[in-house]
Image 1 (cartoon, rainbow, N blue to C red):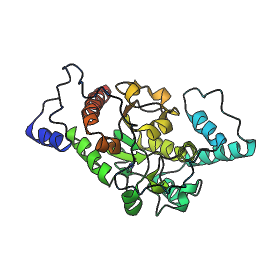
Image 2: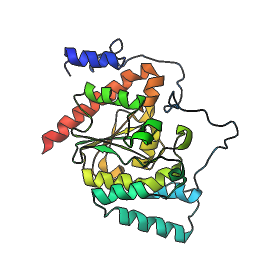
Image 3: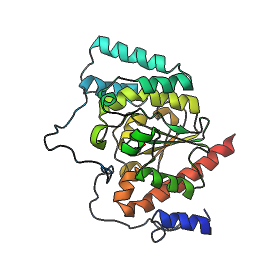
Length: 289
Ligand code: URA
């Protein structure tokens, strides 16, 4: 990709200019020491209360999120009570029939998990409903909960710059959604059970949008889209085939979550590599038909 003045300015804004190298160059040696977790709490996130207990997903929901995925389910998860499993499957089947308006209404009214208790509003997603690109994040933060739109806070500003760096704009051939549609309290990472219950909404969004390419930003997005809890770094730079990805429609690339990039500036160079790879693949996909 040729770097013109506008792109150079964007990369500078992303903090990439000093690190950026042409794709033909050897891999960047930006960091050799141990790195922190991919998803860090946003800077403006209030601290968890000292007595907040670690929250775990109900075992039956953990099993369901894995079972709903095209990928093989792990063997060790305990069986769900039959009634719950049937109810959850019936709900997913119903959601799979909804049109856009009904889907968004259902998301706004959803009370399937505890996240509904503290949200201001659900945040279904935003963008071109016939987009070629689908970016999937983790879940709304405070700003998104207030505005009802994904990625409008600091990480959203970075996401917009990342999109612009490959010639994309929010809302134009791009749809942005999250693994969970309601803000987790204290901006904590969503639990597996919450992701499982929100997954039919993402599946329906994918079916309606029919994207050519999905970019998963961070681990909760990967869990929802693949049904597997995979680390980001080791799974970048490869396209997961549609048959392994929620919806069975589009290939998927994994990259870092923007809020992780805000805390780990040096990783922006890797995110830039990912975006270039995605842009190349999109050009090929568009060339097919
Ligand atoms: N982080 C996300 O993953 N999604 C948002 O919408 C905002 C921040």
